[in-house]
Length: 221
Image: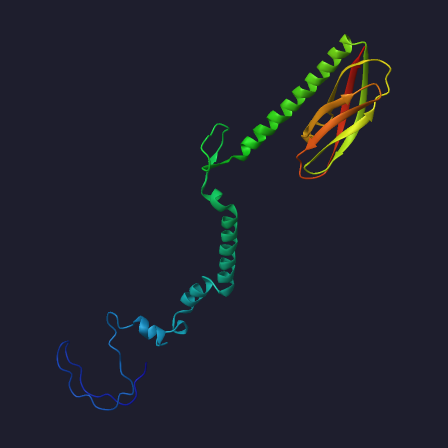
């Protein structure tokens, strides 16, 4: 802020009346005291960033720009989409056990999935061992034993019956059927069996078509 014209007179002690002042003052000197610089003055551009020190200006500009705001908005939208996708599950607790009985309060910890998978693998192995032992026992008891293998193509969520040629000349006592790949998780049962043919009843609740290898053991005397 600058002054124009001439100022003449003498200085007076603090608090005393100022003596003669003559001439023209081209600007009014603001009385800079508390609240003399207000937000209203900043809004009216009386105080601007350009008038601040360069280091302060750089600091303000470094705190964010339009691209930062756009990225933040994008992140918030993505988070909102994820939260909406979770639904009420986003407010659930996590149950790391297989004993919780309260419904609608917890989601199952992924670690329990590993434990369940291990149990299923063990159970499948035990079933295979049991079937092998049963087959061997029956072979030792009965005079005749014939094995038939094949593959049943099962559609999604379907059921049916598949027939196989037997071709034996001895009397059938009983027959059992099992799947060669226990991981397929389908349902099999033995249907009618005679010396010429045998039939397997099956049902699949899988969501896609699957080929299931099977084995039929026929025992007789």
